[in-house]
Image (tube, rainbow, N blue to C red; front, side, top):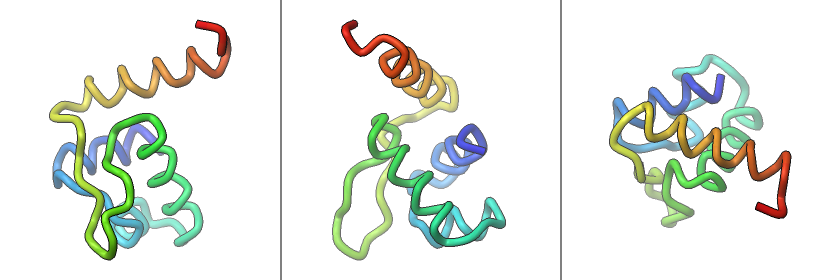
Length: 79
């Protein structure tokens, strides 16, 4: 599902909780958690008030690379 959210970000250039909730057809809390994780890994910007967060990536592959690096760091935080 995170991969699908990355596709949405690349397609729209932004990510709000409401947009993710609608497009992923999930609940608000789940969409918020996905949004927060995408912020943490550097796919989207941090909080900018009541505006949607903006994409920090231009391709799906770039987003997947950021996700994979994040996962690798979680497995081995010393690197």
